[in-house]
Image (cartoon, rainbow, N blue to C red; front, side):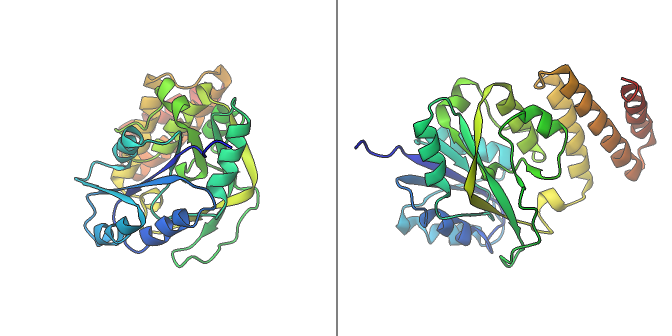
Length: 282
């Protein structure tokens, strides 16, 4: 029997000293091997570096760099990784013990698959399970439509996906380094153009909900990042189907109108309202 293919797990870390150890341990406990664990400390100002360094003796590869954001950090991890398969794991999420094994078995048995995704349970900062919709999952079919529709039971979280590295490289799929949020949606819109996925039914990602995380903050910078996501998606011509383009423009124009109203930027509020009301006539 041939040796198992190498899987590279890429963990970008910024100020996650309370959680990154448990995340690393969930990878070390995987039923699958071999796994290359790459943890990139993205200029953390807390004790994250010391926590990560304590795992080097267990084979964890630690890279330390100045802060450049999660997108640039994931791209760096992809570039230096040596695995046939890639998993981008956030530094506060937890993998079920057979998470990697289930994905690799599926993709090794079906060479047409480019990625696998999973069902997702949410946990709080202490690791307690929150009330969950059992159908919360990643996208794997009608990918672009599900992403632009912002369906409540669908997650773009990178931790929920395992990719064939060659599929990402050959299609030049990478994280937009101008985006820190929602860079995951921009990435999946690229995935949805060409890649084929599969949903794994019997293993889960534990997604940690943190009140002070970037995705849960309401800063002006995050609001402006939503506009950058919208503009970059249009500029990059990522969306294929015309119906999906219309859905995306409607959803984002309405959201951005509300955003700029809250920011007391009435010029942009009117600009996006104008676009929204023109789009709902379609």
